[in-house]
Image 1 (spheres, one colour):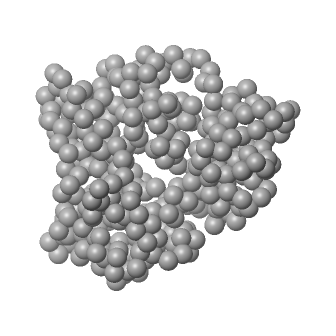
Image 2: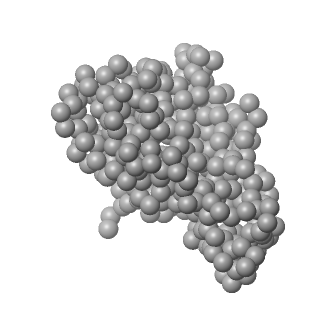
Length: 363
């Protein structure tokens, strides 16, 4: 199968990146040391090509009402210039994808979907758009997405867009920025736990913007460190913490569900039942005393040798200098009376329950 290429593909190759197949795209895994790239984002400014993500536009007089019906959040309450994290669920309340939705105009929204789910989300939104005066368009193929993340992100991006008032651009806010015929949606969003921006722009402008950001001090970072960064920040990854067997409530994300909105939404009945009862499992954070990694799929074991949960994501944390993981743990597990271990290839390694996130930046 021929992999899709982003507009920056040749640049990644010229930089010596290790490339990998991610959701059918040829993407940079790392340019050198993924640990150094990770620490770079925590201390300075990392630059990511995220053009594999999907951008689906919903437009029309019923756009807000439609999204209230199709998604679990109340998107009609989102102001122009703001974005919101939300999810699209099926009738059983399980997660089809987690999304960020930007309100561009009163009747125009941009829905950003995970790379592996773009066609699924587009098809599902199209199927749900019955009787609503709006259109659903997939503009992913004509859109590039570049992320600038880290404590120095404002310093770097403000030099590329000096006319933008960054003091007014708050977290989960966005603005249209124009500079030297470069027109972008500049959003203060990200997936690393650091301050930063995600910049949406036309494919033809991606190479030029990437180079400008490099010139002003940003340094390339690959998908490998993006994964350890989001894990430290306790952010879920679709296919790991979220999937079609998982609901938002057991994932600790019940807050994104707007049960009180005026229109019934798909999955509401099932999610209301789950909310009223107890989930069988909950998403938790754990740390290990060993430096060994608790990888996705490894079992959590109690003192009697019984399986009481499963790891969803695990890595050695460069920031915390310890092995960390997220896992689904049986709700009935009592940490006061029991001990918890991870079965790492036949050896039970002692684990400690800790609150999420593992890392939170100083503001």
